[in-house]
Image 1: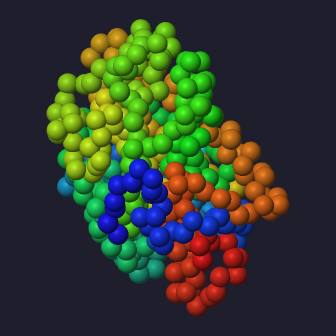
Image 2 (image 1 turned 180 degrees about the horizontal axis):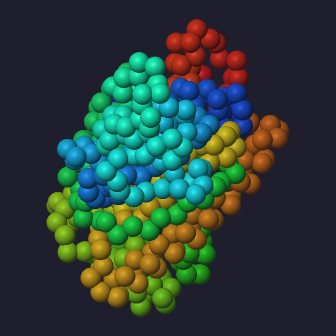
Length: 436
């Protein structure tokens, strides 16, 4: 559906009438049976972001990912083979099902490099393409043909250096899945931003609730007022906050906002340490010396409204990958990995151009530390939300015009569940999908 700018007295939501304006049913975030359907209908059917190609710098480099969102115990290996192809396999030895790649604790993710993968139980070996190359005491087996026992592969493709996997062998190509937003982001210099700060937290809330928190800024002047100076916080709380632009393309969406200007117009708006280090929540003020980040160099999907006060874009690639670009030339990724109806693992990575001096290094560290505080404020609120909607005292909630992407998220997730149930010949027994 084409997108139209919001008129002065109009609404974003009216541009997508299929989303409706009625209260949204949040039973989809508290019903255990609905979560089980999401696991099958969404997380086993869609492309899932698992890392960057920089984690695989040479032939034989690998890392493992635990994938509880796909199924209990599911683990995969991502590796670069001799042809520089990134591949993914189930982390299972074909002999007796032992976990193939792990160190001291089988539940922990690991990384490294090797020529072959060797099972620590009976020493079966597999090459970087997953082929079985060695069987201990092979003549003890009955008509064993090693060609019949390769590692079981998982579909794996790369977009702009981001590695994705899909557990559905019949799914379409990744580039098609990324759609117009993906096409419109091609060429952004992600490969230049290889200095990484990572956070991981176990959150006692449904995975969709955390995405909800990051696709509206209606809460920002209230929840995050301590991140600004007292005078600036009071002004924001009084006048409110509205983003510059919203867009929806198929199952994906985006929100564009002001902020992140470098440096701010008034240094009194920020805290003393931010003035010293030229950094803060919006990242380092000083742009790195690379191509592709100036306003006239940005790909067409970035700052689509071409607003002069633009600060950041947040792209929500369904189901659980957020890609957030900041005007000074750095980016964030979020992933939300559900482990149950009321729990998920939140992963955040901050990517900067490698610093050239101490000041640049400290400015990046300040941004990373400030972000952590910001995210913890959201996470704390979400656990309070989960406990209360879990009582089912209230399950329908009104959403304002700025919360349009929340409507889209819950409707999209519900559509996937309904389609899956139809394909399985079942009817909706939970009544939990929004806008059904």
